[in-house]
Image (cartoon, rainbow, N blue to C red; front, side):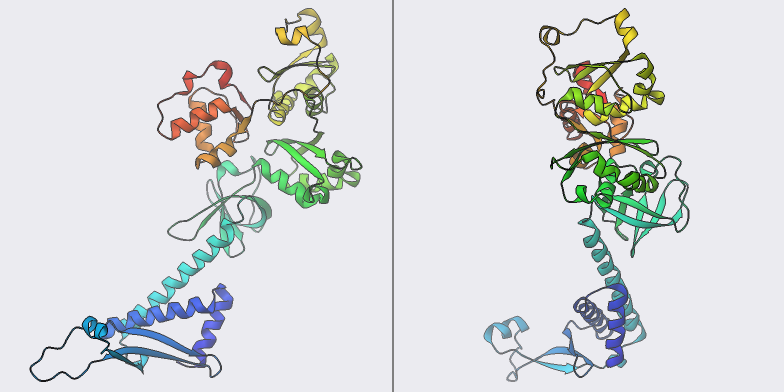
Length: 432
């Protein structure tokens, strides 16, 4: 072996981004395998590399057996080593002596180890980037899935993570959210999403410096991919307007995000600890006149002017549905004329006392399906299917469930004996 061999390894190091030490270890293992294949011996084989002289030597370590008087049996190597009588010598091995089969074995070992090293490097690189947004390039697609180039790795965009109706053309560049990195027998599988609500959050971090720096906080995101999103924002600096910072000069910042999401409309609303004001903001662009909250079951009755009712509900209920997702509250909307004709009796707690101006008590915790799926280490779509089979209306992994439903799901998936039917109807309520 000579300098040409080292140059070949250095070139491989640059192309595959594999450390030289790992390459030398791979070649050493391959040569040891070829040596054993050719000579049928198990002596140690090692590489001796001299970078200054640009030489590589293959050395084999052989034991030097002591002389034994005639008639006596030669002790085993282990016994000689225990007695301190075993010595070794190293001699350079001529690889030209290897047969064709041994050389082929060495080549196979080298290629296999290089592929394994590449897989480990890709996994180590991307396993720490789950939750990030990266730019990928469309390479190919089949009947359901889209495959994207992500540097030297390939990412999978499953059908249920694609924006409905979005075209995926060869060489299109997209920003995607890394959902998970799976180890497989081949290359690691990087699963990405275009529908995850966190994609919107990360895009705002990229476009709005105040969000990236933490001055403006995104409190919640409700999304129907490809159609519309609502984003609740809160400023931690009284001198900075959270909504204005996210919209940007003449809407430049939010428009960049809309363009990235292929025209998906984005409503930016102001977060408020007062649930009455928060619900009013969440239902924008509609203007509502009255909000009657019932913290006991996390529901609210909203009264809207007759002219604003259809806008508050939205096309096919989209606006009120997104507002419910954003706030975590159930929302029932009535027009002023409907309320005047048939006013409902409010719960005793709400009827006896006026609506407090201070912030209401913190609402019961609700979990997004994708958060619960990550906790239980299952696919979001599988949880959606389980809930739908139990008769619970959920539309996507963005839907929320109560803590009681989440606990029952944990028991079901861990082999518990409970069923979702054991919960009361009120406890099974799910916000889309």
